[in-house]
Amino acid sequence: METAFTPFQSLGGGALIGLAAVLLMATLGRIMGATGILAGFMQPANLSDWSWRAAVLAGMITGPVAVLLLSGSMPAVEVPVSTTMLIIGGFIVGIGVTLGGGCTSGHGVCGMARLSPRSIVATVAFMITTGITVFVIRHVIGG
Image 1 (spheres, helix red, strand yellow):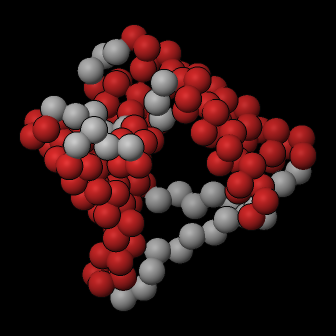
Image 2: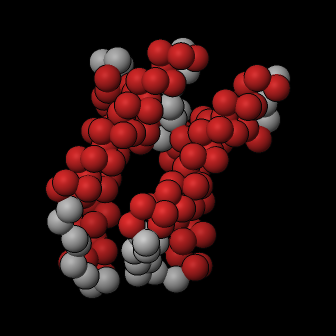
């Protein structure tokens, strides 16, 4: 398996994510953690809480459509595992998000920017786990 090196696209995407996080914090005082946004969307406190969450989720879903309109083709997405493995991985991520008190976007982007010790520890744990997982998948299992 080869991983594509896309520094300019990655930089642009990261800058847009950072800008969106700053704008959400500046305008609504909310942290842009994807799982927290989704959880609050599913069980909103009130209509105004639901509406901003719906707008963020709509933006996440329609992003590829914007790429299609600008470039003429959908972004390439390759998933080298079965649907069963995606479902199992989703459950594992859900458990991790629950135990870690948030996801990579909440801790890694917003929490690190606020110098939150809890988020720094969580992000380091995410990165170490990711490295170990990639090593095991590529070199031990041979995927």
